[in-house]
Length: 337
Image (spheres, rainbow, N blue to C red):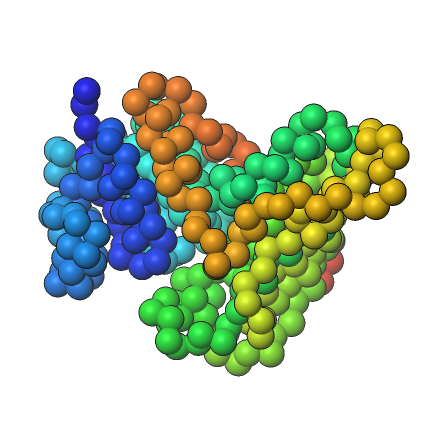
């Protein structure tokens, strides 16, 4: 059986998780890494038991005939150009969220993937978290009926500050983009995948940490085409441990605080039932192996990627509408022109 060659772009936290996941998959081999620091990259690869070629020139990496698949884990503003070049070189692509920092770039990426005929997926890894899988199963089974209101919140602590190697670009709007692009897009993606398409957004921002060149705290109200509403928030400056929480109200029940369920379909239930679930926080193992195994499987079996690219583009469109609403102080209707 063919082993597919993987190139990982970047050596940060997400890149390391990608490398670990690929290293445990028998259908692939990490054959190349792109990094500005050759010796540092070699040391990180060696610590994982890997011995790939280290490239500082992306063009040369794409010319390596062993590379079949590219995992893009570089800072946000690099994603679009690197993904389009990879598609034009005929490589399959897993790009970490966000896809890009502008709507035009996301659409250009989608067209490049379509034109090249390669497998491509955005790394919304929370789809593979036990919490989200449980919620997805409950909703699909109709346990809480039709969702008419939702809340989802991505709260990232800022107390690590400059101790985190990515802090220098995380705080810059020209590279990171915005709070929702950096992390809040997980909340948008999760809620939209459960409810449907958004018709209008309104958003407000604030900032307490002056290291950021943009407002890192954002609250958004969403209206969906089916009439449902949602409140989402994203902050990169909280003074508490990381938290991603979600609440869903349905016509037959609700899901609260990630793992509490109440349903009118369960006769005699008088209070919330707690479902012991591994939550997506920094104390649990991130679900990158499950995500990457599913993506590799779609390449090996020549099937559609587990996350649809059109849905991912729509998620990003909502994020850009949130950012535009906050900047212009008015509701923004979707789809965007």
